[in-house]
Image (cartoon, rainbow, N blue to C red; front, side, top):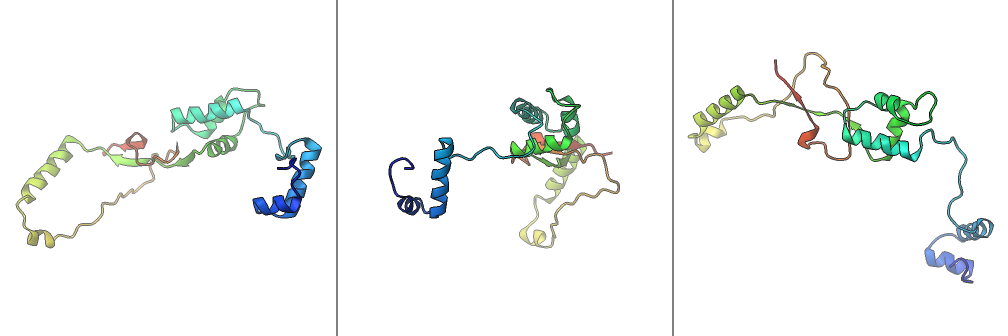
Amino acid sequence: MLQGGVRTADMARAINCNVCTVRRLRKRDRETGWAADRPRSGRPRVTTPAQNRYIRTSHLRNRYTMETTTARVTPGPHNPSISAQTVCNRLREAGLRACRPVVRQVLTRHHRQQRRLWAQTHRRWTRQDWQKVLFTDESRFCLTRGNLQVPWWKNGVTFHSKNWQIRCSP
């Protein structure tokens, strides 16, 4: 359309944009030979595309890897190493974000026996018996902050069983 002899106003109307935008695109096409964005100034990237792929795949293989560890072991020509913030930025660009693992308590054989016993004792209850019962949500209580606060990197699969971190009860 740019080189087809179409008037600027007609082209702007056809693509529903301002006439100044079409003029600027035509000028850029005349100067550079293409209408795509020009390279912008700014700080050059510390990591190469190969390093970015390495960061992404290493975190997809082991989601509990810390950013500092990845920054320290990432291969490549960086002096002396890339920062953990750079690793976080590359993971965010790849669509991964840090989350806390879902902590689930393991049901032991004793827990299962207790649940089965409770169900057997209440299986003959009538609707009137159940109307007197108040069901509340289970809550987790922690008296001290444990070491279970390890972030992991996800891309939309929070409650998948492989993303659970199992907590053993004392």
